[in-house]
Amino acid sequence: MIGRLVALALMCGAGVLHAEEFESWVRAEVASGKKTIVLPKGTHHAYAKNGIQRTLHISNNNDGMKQILFDLQDAEDLVIDGNGAELIFHGHIIPFYLKNAKNVTIKNLTIDWEHPFFSQGEIVNVGKGFFDVRFGDEYPVGIRDERLVFLNPDLPEPMDFNNINIVNPELGRLVFKSQDEYGVGSDHTAELLEKNLVRLRSLHILSPLKPGHIAVFQYNDRSSPGFTVHRSENIHLQNITMYHAAGFGSIFEGSRNIYIDRLKAVRRPNSGRWYTTHHDVTHFVECRGDIHITNCRFEFQGDDDCNIHGIFRPVMRKEDDKTLRTRLNHFQQMGVDTLFMGDMIGFHDAETLELLGEGKLAKFMDRDPAQEDRLVFEDPLPDLDWKNVVVTLRAYDTDVQISNNHFSNHRARNLLIKTLGKVRIHDNYFNVQGCAIKIRSEATSWYEAGGVEDVEIYNNVFDQCNSGGFSQATFHIHATLIITIVKFRFIRM
Image (cartoon, rainbow, N blue to C red; front, side, top):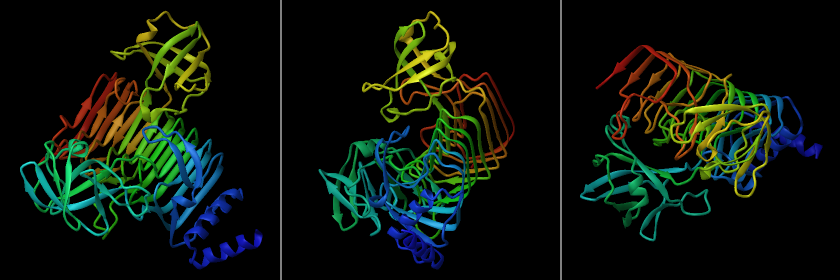
């Protein structure tokens, strides 16, 4: 075994590692217990079929068996220096998985997928209730049951799409007043007119289409974030470029002190691709302490730049004077484990979301097969109509700093803020089809919670925000205790 590791190390130095050799080298380096891992220079490929398998429940994503390259469970005081290397992934695979990790820094690398989880083609003809799209050979297509599917070479099955977005390549941006085409994704018929040329018919086309526009088709899949971080603390992502991720760029759950600096989610030069990450670039679920995003550039991703939120858990019943049974209601939150003993839990009216009281968590019991949790509190519970109550984490020590970033040219929102503590958003550039900053909780759909109380927004530029056909304002703000918006600049066409 020692001889094999020496040979692998020599090959790393020579920059000639093949995919399986690189994957074996990564596993050996992680298992060695080293405190610094330096990747060999060059481009390295990793395949889902060779990944480490774990069954994971990742919030806002599809759960199940996952394949992992860097399995960093229980890692501590670790630095992974990419050394300028580029990692190219194939299929359903998570590049970095951290659980119960402490003091981990990942830096100086580039991440991409050989075949992204979207396809795109040029609109060449538009008529009443239909449009024709010509795809390049790099985006092979098929027809299944009169529906368009995509034949990604790295995936075992054809992929459906659930949304289309429209790009004006001459302007280098999404088409003004274009919309999400979820209706087309769910209700259309497709006809292959000739090789790579597809006619899509639908009664639900909303966007102003023209020949020459580029249609970007998002796969109906959320499977493989670039970075998945669970119940960890003091995590640093530095100087990383993400040309693509087959899900979120990064997701942090039940974690503390997250620092993201000089992360770029940008289009790969000379690739012709129009989209970057499949969904959000950064996503935080019931995190505490510092959440700092600085000096970053995010563009053309499939969803938000950043979403920071908690989870509303409906109360199923009160079991005794200190115990509640609660449930995770959204199917992409099933199995999520983000609460700790000693957490302060808020009791909210399920309809108005008014805070009715609080209690300190003494014990958080494993969920049963019905996805119900048992929450045991230190003190007796107040007398409430518990069947009309939802509960959520009250993380008062959260410190959100979002500064000196460039957020531009994508279909959703820039920032979704749903957290307690101090939120400071300053010296950023915003450009988006939806609202630039949204502050809103809800307990009916995604159950994303957050009592926002202290927000300052200053020294920002808002350039043609709210330019899509679905949004209402640059700022979409619901009940907030204290919010200050000053020293800003608006740019309009």
